[in-house]
Image (cartoon, rainbow, N blue to C red; front, side, top):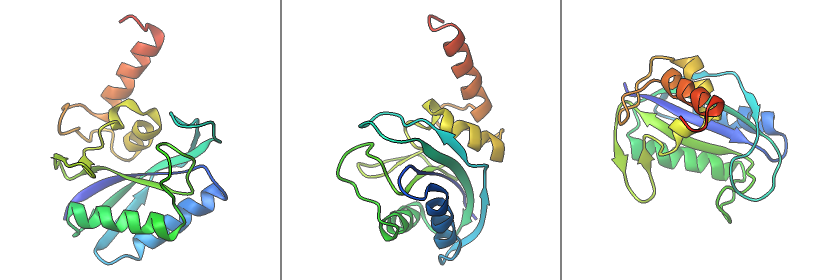
Length: 160
Protein backbone atom coordinates (compact mmCIF):
# COMPACT_ATOMS: atom_id res chain seq x y z
CA UNK A 1 0.00 0.00 0.00
CA UNK A 2 1.21 3.52 -0.74
CA UNK A 3 2.86 5.44 2.07
CA UNK A 4 1.99 9.12 2.14
CA UNK A 5 3.09 12.10 4.21
CA UNK A 6 0.57 14.88 4.89
CA UNK A 7 1.40 18.21 6.52
CA UNK A 8 -1.18 19.55 8.95
CA UNK A 9 -1.48 23.05 10.34
CA UNK A 10 -3.93 25.35 12.08
CA UNK A 11 -3.77 28.96 13.26
CA UNK A 12 -7.42 29.88 13.86
CA UNK A 13 -9.73 28.96 16.70
CA UNK A 14 -8.95 25.97 18.87
CA UNK A 15 -5.85 24.97 16.91
CA UNK A 16 -5.08 21.70 18.69
CA UNK A 17 -8.72 20.62 18.57
CA UNK A 18 -8.88 21.46 14.83
CA UNK A 19 -5.90 19.18 14.17
CA UNK A 20 -7.37 16.39 16.32
CA UNK A 21 -10.73 16.62 14.52
CA UNK A 22 -9.01 16.50 11.11
CA UNK A 23 -6.98 13.45 12.18
CA UNK A 24 -10.12 11.70 13.44
CA UNK A 25 -11.93 12.39 10.15
CA UNK A 26 -8.94 11.05 8.21
CA UNK A 27 -8.64 7.92 10.36
CA UNK A 28 -12.37 7.21 9.92
CA UNK A 29 -12.24 7.58 6.12
CA UNK A 30 -12.56 4.61 3.78
CA UNK A 31 -9.27 3.59 2.24
CA UNK A 32 -7.13 4.90 5.12
CA UNK A 33 -5.42 2.09 7.03
CA UNK A 34 -2.80 3.65 9.25
CA UNK A 35 -2.05 7.14 10.50
CA UNK A 36 1.04 7.93 12.53
CA UNK A 37 1.50 11.48 13.85
CA UNK A 38 4.57 13.57 14.56
CA UNK A 39 4.76 15.83 17.57
CA UNK A 40 2.85 19.09 17.03
CA UNK A 41 4.98 22.26 17.01
CA UNK A 42 4.09 25.92 17.35
CA UNK A 43 5.55 27.90 14.45
CA UNK A 44 5.49 31.36 12.93
CA UNK A 45 3.42 31.87 9.77
CA UNK A 46 5.26 32.01 6.45
CA UNK A 47 3.93 34.60 3.99
CA UNK A 48 0.44 36.02 3.77
CA UNK A 49 -1.21 38.75 5.82
CA UNK A 50 -0.36 39.34 9.50
CA UNK A 51 -1.68 36.38 11.50
CA UNK A 52 -1.24 34.27 14.59
CA UNK A 53 1.14 31.36 15.13
CA UNK A 54 0.45 27.93 13.70
CA UNK A 55 0.44 24.51 15.20
CA UNK A 56 2.08 22.23 12.64
CA UNK A 57 2.86 18.56 12.27
CA UNK A 58 3.06 15.74 9.75
CA UNK A 59 1.06 12.54 9.43
CA UNK A 60 2.36 9.34 7.87
CA UNK A 61 -0.56 7.59 6.20
CA UNK A 62 -0.98 4.18 4.65
CA UNK A 63 -3.80 4.14 2.12
CA UNK A 64 -5.24 2.37 -0.89
CA UNK A 65 -6.53 5.67 -2.27
CA UNK A 66 -4.93 7.01 -5.43
CA UNK A 67 -3.22 10.40 -5.12
CA UNK A 68 -6.15 12.35 -6.60
CA UNK A 69 -8.66 10.49 -4.40
CA UNK A 70 -6.57 11.33 -1.35
CA UNK A 71 -6.35 14.95 -2.48
CA UNK A 72 -10.16 15.12 -2.73
CA UNK A 73 -10.45 13.54 0.71
CA UNK A 74 -8.12 16.05 2.43
CA UNK A 75 -9.95 18.92 0.73
CA UNK A 76 -13.26 17.49 1.91
CA UNK A 77 -11.91 17.30 5.49
CA UNK A 78 -10.71 20.91 5.25
CA UNK A 79 -14.14 22.00 3.99
CA UNK A 80 -15.99 20.07 6.72
CA UNK A 81 -13.92 21.86 9.35
CA UNK A 82 -14.67 25.29 7.83
CA UNK A 83 -11.59 26.02 5.74
CA UNK A 84 -11.97 29.02 3.42
CA UNK A 85 -9.78 29.92 0.46
CA UNK A 86 -10.28 33.67 -0.08
CA UNK A 87 -6.61 34.68 -0.05
CA UNK A 88 -3.31 32.85 -0.52
CA UNK A 89 -1.57 32.05 2.79
CA UNK A 90 -4.48 33.44 4.78
CA UNK A 91 -5.10 32.32 8.39
CA UNK A 92 -6.82 28.94 8.39
CA UNK A 93 -8.75 26.65 10.67
CA UNK A 94 -7.03 23.67 9.08
CA UNK A 95 -4.49 23.18 6.33
CA UNK A 96 -3.74 19.73 4.93
CA UNK A 97 -1.08 19.33 2.24
CA UNK A 98 0.06 16.10 0.63
CA UNK A 99 3.84 16.27 0.92
CA UNK A 100 4.67 13.00 -0.80
CA UNK A 101 2.86 9.99 -2.17
CA UNK A 102 5.02 6.87 -2.31
CA UNK A 103 7.69 8.37 -4.60
CA UNK A 104 5.17 9.77 -7.10
CA UNK A 105 6.14 12.86 -9.08
CA UNK A 106 3.06 14.74 -10.28
CA UNK A 107 2.75 18.30 -11.51
CA UNK A 108 -0.77 19.47 -12.30
CA UNK A 109 -2.30 22.94 -11.87
CA UNK A 110 -4.18 21.89 -8.72
CA UNK A 111 -1.90 19.20 -7.29
CA UNK A 112 1.88 18.94 -7.17
CA UNK A 113 3.58 15.96 -5.53
CA UNK A 114 6.02 16.12 -3.88
CA UNK A 115 4.86 19.42 -2.40
CA UNK A 116 6.85 22.12 -4.23
CA UNK A 117 8.05 23.92 -1.08
CA UNK A 118 8.43 21.09 1.42
CA UNK A 119 12.23 21.25 1.21
CA UNK A 120 12.17 24.96 2.17
CA UNK A 121 9.97 24.71 5.26
CA UNK A 122 11.45 23.85 8.63
CA UNK A 123 7.92 23.40 10.03
CA UNK A 124 7.49 20.51 7.59
CA UNK A 125 11.00 19.07 7.59
CA UNK A 126 11.37 18.71 11.36
CA UNK A 127 8.21 16.63 11.87
CA UNK A 128 8.93 14.69 8.66
CA UNK A 129 12.41 13.87 9.99
CA UNK A 130 10.82 12.76 13.27
CA UNK A 131 8.63 10.24 11.41
CA UNK A 132 11.25 9.11 8.87
CA UNK A 133 14.67 10.80 8.83
CA UNK A 134 15.68 8.59 5.87
CA UNK A 135 12.71 9.40 3.62
CA UNK A 136 14.15 10.37 0.24
CA UNK A 137 12.79 13.30 -1.76
CA UNK A 138 12.04 11.83 -5.22
CA UNK A 139 13.20 14.95 -7.09
CA UNK A 140 16.20 16.16 -5.06
CA UNK A 141 17.33 12.73 -3.78
CA UNK A 142 17.83 14.16 -0.27
CA UNK A 143 16.49 13.33 3.17
CA UNK A 144 14.75 15.73 5.57
CA UNK A 145 17.98 15.72 7.59
CA UNK A 146 19.95 16.81 4.49
CA UNK A 147 17.58 19.73 3.92
CA UNK A 148 17.67 20.74 7.58
CA UNK A 149 21.48 20.67 7.61
CA UNK A 150 21.55 22.86 4.49
CA UNK A 151 19.19 25.32 6.22
CA UNK A 152 21.48 25.44 9.24
CA UNK A 153 24.46 26.26 7.03
CA UNK A 154 22.52 29.02 5.21
CA UNK A 155 21.33 30.50 8.51
CA UNK A 156 24.88 30.51 9.95
CA UNK A 157 26.50 31.82 6.78
CA UNK A 158 23.93 33.38 4.40
CA UNK A 159 26.61 33.86 1.71
CA UNK A 160 27.49 30.17 1.43
